[in-house]
Every structure is written in C-alpha cells, then in structure tokens.
Image (cartoon, rainbow, N blue to C red; front, side):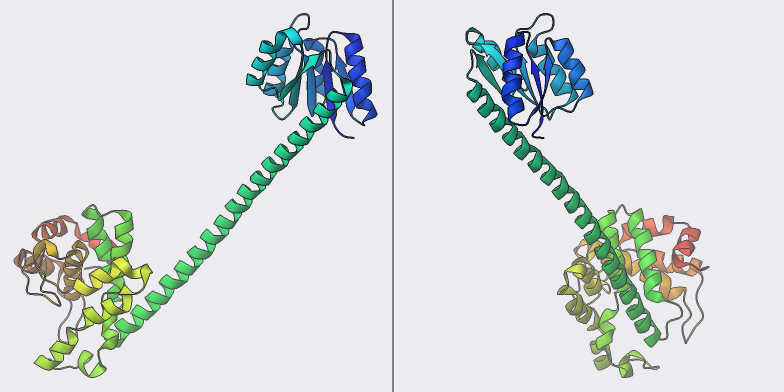
Length: 347
C-alpha cells in the first residue's frame, strides 16, 4: 500500500477519474462529494494526502483544509481549483496546503504531483522522526554524562576528605579540624550573602586550607617545642605550597585563593602577602574567623578546649586587627547552636 488518499470534489466524474488513476498505482482512495463527507472520512481513516476541490456546496474545500490541518497536521493537502480562481488557490497555501492543481487537469500531471508531494512528505516525516530520536538520544546521553560526572565528583570529594583526614591525623588533630572549618566557613559565608556557587568554592578552600603542610617535614610540623626563626620561615611557606598544588587544577581554581591567603590579617601583618583590609579575598577573611573558632574550641596537647564565650571575647578583641570588623559583627550575631550544628558537637 502506497498511501491513503482522500478525494473530495462535488463532481462525480472528476472524483472517479482521479480515483481510477491513483488506484492503478496502488493508492487507497476515499471519495467524498462534500466537505462534511470528507470530515467523516478524516475521522475514520489515517490519511497521507487529501485532494480537495475549493468550491463545493455547503462548507468549502478551504474549510475542510482547516479541519484536516487541525485534526491531522501531518496529512498533506493539494487543492483543486479552476483556472479563474488562482488567488483563492494561492491563499490556501497560507492555511497549510502544499500545492494546487488546476482544472481542467492532465491525469498524468495529477499522478506526478501526488507522487512528488507524498515523497516530500515522507522525507519531512523521516527528518522529524530523526530529529525526535536525536533529541531523545541527546537527552539520554546528557543524563548519562551528568550521572557519571556526579559519581566522579563524589569520588573526588571522598578522596579529598580521606586525604585531609590523613593530614589532620598527621598533626594529631582530634576529629577532623578541616571538615569542621569547612562547615563553619559555609555557615558564615551564607550569612554574609555569598552565592551558592561561591559557597562551594569556599567550602573546598576551607577543607584544603592546610594541604601545603604536606610539603613541611614532620620534624618541624610535629615539633613539641617552640619553632625557631628558620623553622617558622619554612612553616610559613605552606600556604604558597598549597596554592602551587591546587592552582594548576581547574576544579580548585577558586579554592586555591583561600589556601594562599588564609593566614593574612586585616591589619596587614599576616603572610605570605602582607595583604591588608579588603585586599584580602573575602573567602580568606571568613576563614580566618572560623579557623580561630575551631582552634580555640578544640583540645590541644598544652591545653583543654576553651569555651565559646572565650572565642567571642577573642574575636571581639581582635576586631579590625586580625579580623574584618564587619565579618566580626556578623560572626557575633550567629547563635551558638548554629555553630554547634555546623560542628556536629557541643562548644
């Protein structure tokens, strides 16, 4: 079967001539003497093409054209018109007709037009199907890539956490100092109105702030006594070492900035760049506060953890010296229970 065709014309002879011509070529034809009959056929059968006479009693071929395009937009329509009604035929193109055939017509010409029109329709439908399949495949592949990237990022995060825990353990930290300051930093940064994308970057930087200590020998890092000047000079290199480790990795581009400047001070007496005030990246200014919070509220070999109130006193005392004064005010406004929730422990 080559296709289903509707022939709608109020002249019996014309319908029959077209029917005979197309049926010989293997097409299945349905005849209608009016637009109403044509609409009934449309509702009962799946049509590939419709040949519609423009002038029919009652509703016109144009009305039937509109019905077809509303009911089955993929059905191709050819209009049949008299030579003296060309303007109307051309207007039908606007309503969705593919082409028109003029009366009196040559049946061979009608057959050729029908075949060419159906071939064009076939190609259009194949292309639509290809595009639909392609879009579906793109969606499926995008979802696969998103899933894989999520798994890779998750594995990345787990690996980092394991590495940082190992570094914390190397310094005999109780619990995970780096994970706590990451949570603290995100809490303070969120309160400061930092965007979600920047929160992620700050979290990474806080987690990795001491990654540069991997380049400091145990003799210095774990020395129980006070460091001498030369040892302090080596210890102060760890932010730069950490920056060098991370700056070449796109994933850590923003985090590397915090790592480099996390020991800067608001008054310019920090290191390694002696940056002052707002010249210090806000991520590093945030970190300086939360690092102090965790350091003071954690046990040390030489003392027990201090109280949260002691932290508040210290932060207030160092306002505009070590710490950004506006961030200090914001820090002080955050309730104790929110800090405890971030830390996962009582302070």
